[in-house]
Image (cartoon, rainbow, N blue to C red; front, side):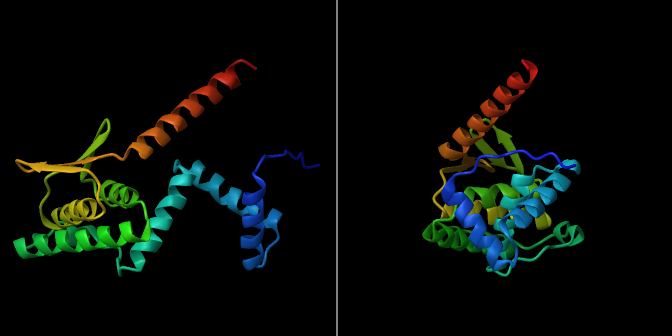
Length: 189
C-alpha cells in the first residue's frame, strides 16, 4: 500500500499548475508526480533541481537570441580584438533588451560565467576573471551583459567586478537560514 503525504501550496499556485497540466494533456497529480520525479532524479545525480529549472529558463531565453552550445575546443582558440569588442557590444545590447523585458540579467550573468569558469565569487560581488580565446569572448559578453542590464559594475586595471544585486543576496541568505532551521528541526525530533 502506498503511503501518502499532504503538501501545502497556495491556491493561486495550484490553479496555475492545474492549467499547465491540462495544457500538457495531464491531470494535476500526474503532472506533479512527473515534476517531482524529475527533480528527485536530478538531486540523486547531485544537481540542485530548482537551479536546473532556472538554468533551463535562461537557456530558453538565450535561444531566442540564437545562442548555441559551443565545443570547448572552439572556446580555447584565440580570437581577435575585434571579436572581443563585438562580444561586449552584443552583450550590452542583450543586457539592455533583457532589462526592457524585465528579465533578471544577473541570473544569465551567473549562468554564463559559472558554466564557462570565468567568475570568482567574493561576498556580495563577482569578479570576471581575465581570460583569453573563447573564454575571453564569453567574459566580454558577460561584461557587456552586466553593463547593458544596469547591474552595478566597476572596471579598472584589468579587473571587472559585478555587484551581486541585493535581492539575490537576501534570497540566498533566506535559503541558507531556512536550510539551517530545517536541519535543526530534524535533529530535535
